[in-house]
Image 1 (cartoon, rainbow, N blue to C red):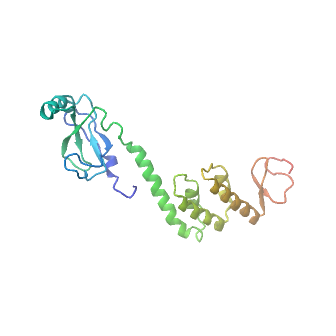
Image 2 (tube, one colour):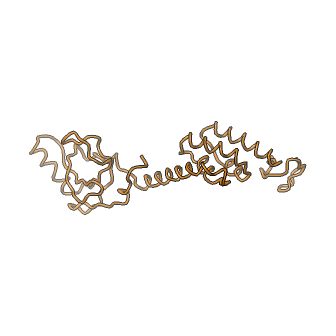
Image 3 (cartoon, rainbow, N blue to C red):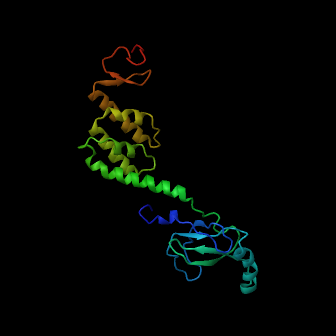
Length: 216
C-alpha cells in the first residue's frame, strides 16, 4: 500500500457548482458505466447535499431513467477535469471518506520502518541502537522485521536499550519474553543488575542501591 503514489494527499479540489471542498473517498472497485476500473484508488467527491448538481439530480434521474437516484460531482486525483457520477442515495460515499492525515501518518510510519530495516545491515558494526529500537518498539511493524531487530539487540549488547524496552507494553508476549531474556544476558555481560525497588541499574555485587539507598 505504502509504495504507491500518495501525492493526492496534498490535493484540494473545489466543486464548481457549490464551491464546497470535495472529499477524498475510496473509489468503487468497478466503474458502473463500462465495468472497468477508475484508474485510481481514490476519487474526490462533492458530498454537499445542498449542491445544485445533487439537489436537481433526483428529478433528472427519475424523468430520464425512471428510478431513484441523483448525481455527485467527482474528480480524479491529479486531474483538472471534473465529471458527474450517479448515486443511489444521499449516503453514497459518506462511509468511504479517507482521512488524509491518518494516511500520511501511516505512510510516514511505514517509511521509518523501511529505513530502520535497511539500517539493520550495518547497525552492529556501527554500534547503532536507534534502528533496532525503532523496530522493536513499533507495534505496527511486521513481526519479521521486529524479530530481526531483536536478534541485533543481543549482538549490540547495549545497556541503553533496557529503559525503552522495559517501559514498552508489547502486544506480542513472545517479544516480551525474548527481550527480557536478552536484557538479562546484557546485564550479566556488564556485571549489572536492576534494583528491585527503583529499577535503576547498579553493580551486580551491590548490597545497597546507590540510587534509592534500599538494602538489597
